[in-house]
Image 1 (spheres, helix red, strand yellow):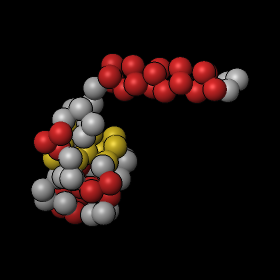
Image 2: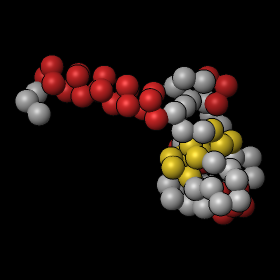
Image 3: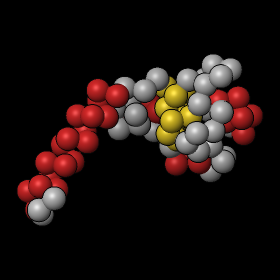
Length: 79
């Protein structure tokens, strides 16, 4: 997310939903310094890092980037 939105760079960011029953799907390095990590309930994440910025997941973007990375690997090695 920080790659695609420069305004998020250097800030604690979590992919997921900040709702009461939400869960962190992924956390930036900045968020991890506060103990925020994948599978952590959103409420706990916000307690650990009150300035945490939640962004909704963009699965189609992640899928496309994953395919690009796999394509690069395939250019250099047999998978």
